[in-house]
Length: 151
Image (cartoon, rainbow, N blue to C red; front, side, top):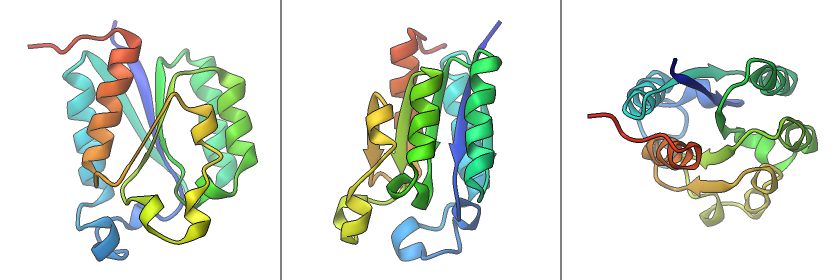
């Protein structure tokens, strides 16, 4: 049976493709989800992709990941990255291998984006690779889980 990973996207990521394309590009959330599903399948994993603009919903999904014995998490918490101690605490509490990802290079942007509460709860963080960061995140997560690329 294939291991499941969750790919969680936070606020405003439903607007990918139309929101500030000069920063985030023209790829849509559907493009991200397709990329994640294909990348995960290449390692024999199943990616369950979810997006919410609500912090509590993201926390509920993180808790659900533990109860469903999800193997790993990829999270783009959007603006909550810089503000949510609650998301940090949820990730620490479930003890599931987690990779933080951001489409833009947050360190080349406003100062308030330079701090991440998520990073301290993740084993890796990626930013600035566009949506390809999700592919890189899943590849790194697969390696952490010991999953090998399938033919």
